[in-house]
Length: 168
Image (cartoon, rainbow, N blue to C red):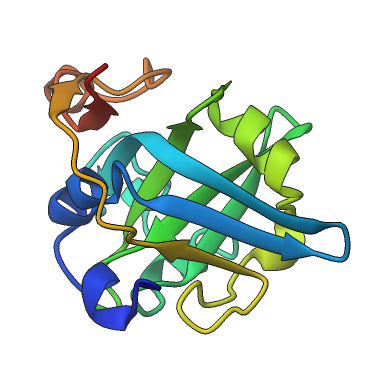
């Protein structure tokens, strides 16, 4: 079943947890790619010093203030596209980073495999026909850990267990 607006229109931490085990589906002229999500990270609003929207709305971050289910894709280190999905209430900037999928550890590897680029930025994952997320009923155990690569954040937010990982 394709995930709809109501799935994403919830608090970021709930969505980040519940996305683990779901399936990213990407349809292209070459066929269909399906990848099970194994790791996510939650970025929870302006108060979260690791969140891109920590310093408020900018041209880059205004997508995070859009409605739940909006795709936020950005370029990291000028070469890697990273995939996020906006969650929760509109005008409250929260998003979930899709960090890894089965066989593709690392957010840049999965966007490359799925052919996800900045062209998807600001599209709705719930309305998109060529890229969406499915719940196929798979159930897994999830462990929590600290987020990766956020040394710039305050200690309080560096230490939050806001990374959700499928247990093997």
